[in-house]
Image (tube, rainbow, N blue to C red; front, side, top):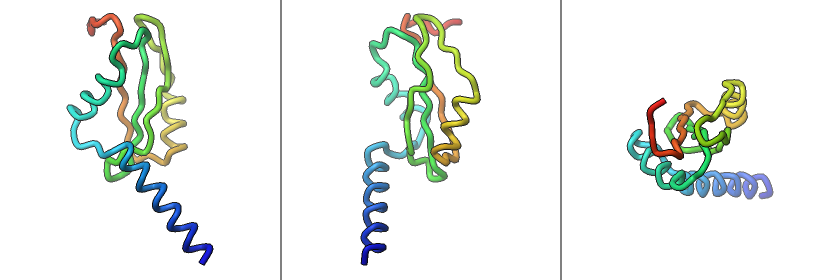
Length: 103
């Protein structure tokens, strides 16, 4: 009985986290979501979204916070988290606090 209860609890926690994070169906969907979340930030943020094989969001994490015009990211940090969450795919995004997307 205890084992079944533990399995059921794990399933419920997993399902509630998937509902909270949602499923990625298009790049436009992710862009709209992140535009709202990153609106008004004064520093550059590099965000990584970790997905499972069904494109459900496992985790979303700000990997780096930079200055007004730069955010330095090392691949080691990005991939360490991908392995930690056992993600099948990752999405990376960053903002331009100045509003000017040119380099």
